[in-house]
Length: 225
Image 1 (tube, rainbow, N blue to C red):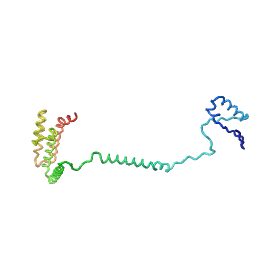
Image 2: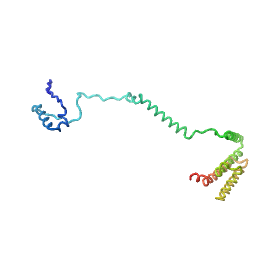
Image 3: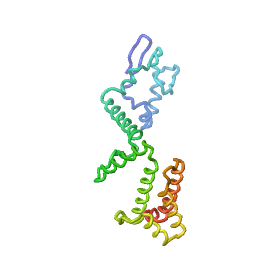
Image 4: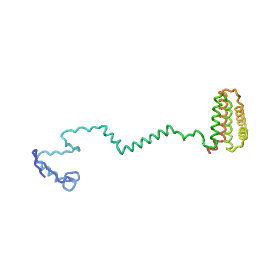
């Protein structure tokens, strides 16, 4: 269709398929389009624009400016629920890592012997503060010997001397180790009243070393199996 304008005639194409890539490949549309363009040009110059950009604006448009309002959209509802949940998860992870690195620790046990344990701990504190270090040391070492006896023979062990029972158990496997353990246990039990803290620490360290060796040989390997 031909339309008249002040700057010259304008031709409007009612069917775009006649001149697009799809239509030109059908039948003789390409030849018909060529004849049509030559006829419309009336001997003038035909300019074929192969650009893929639309140049429809006479003046350049200013670039769109970004502001804080664009960022605030990510914190508007319903995204606020997502941020709240994420913050709660982060707080729980920080609390878990910084405070609860282990199961909750009770100050006192809830078993039948809880009151007895509290009484023993209080008595030990009083004896330590009044200078009675050696009795506290002996009581602690005796508790360690009974604990080792129960680890070797079970919690239902009779009330006989734990050192004698442990020595009999060790003698069947290693008589030399049994003798060393008995000697160390006797030295711990015979700690003098005037012993210094360094002497007591050395005796305790020696007994702990012997205890660790006994556990490694008789208790821990069987548990691993």
